[in-house]
Length: 318
Image (cartoon, rainbow, N blue to C red; front, side):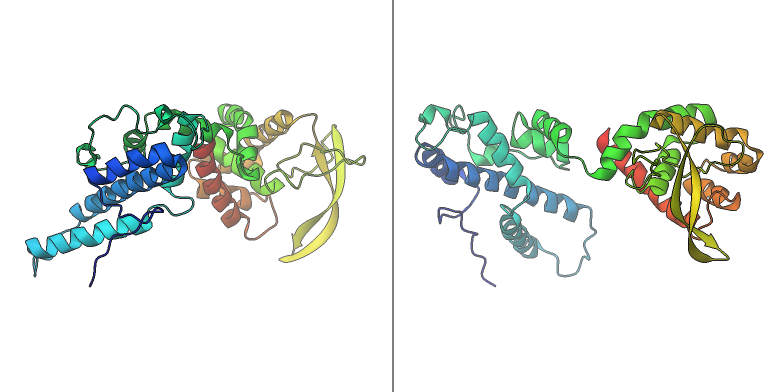
């Protein structure tokens, strides 16, 4: 097998040595865009090599045919694979490029070489660049660019959230308040609201087209004295899905909807067992189905899955 170096955008080898760094220093004064790209690719390649090295160190060797020669061959293969995986669209190098460009203030190739990304590196050589023994996302980011931690936090706070993420962020405070009132975990309550409303997309509408703020699909029975939204919905009668017209409770705000839902579960004897089993997502979901909250025979399974999804989303938006 022939192990050939992976070529850079300028046609030169990306060997991680002093000569390679010197070439990048020179290129930064003539073609800054290309230099930044090559720099990012080299740093990503370093990280990938350390990552594979760390992964191999946790794997037990077979002991058969293992010697210094096979180890060198493995290291060479890892190096080539790391270079081949570096610089791909959407990879770590893209983030490094953005950081370097941000630090340079968007200067172009005609700018003064004092703005070079290698300014201040002096005699630093690539063999002095160390990577953590067990690289993590945070440690790797710190090794790649000094300002990357702040940049990552900024990207997380400014990136466009998905509809489900927006739903979680918008209603998690009300879900926390409901948790305090009922003892039911907030992510269980938020998950049920997401399932019943299709992440907020399918709420009962008032006659004038405005929302009822009813995220939990709570119907308006004879004891309800508030506003009502009358809509066509799907009910399972004898296990068969049918379209029926039903009346649903309407609220002035989403906070009112969460409060009414909390009161329904905590005050009604019908749901006492549900609250008692709410320590797990599956127990909560099965309790609701057994109490007759919904007629869908697969309600418990669907709710359990959405609650687990909601839990993951809560971690990503906080």
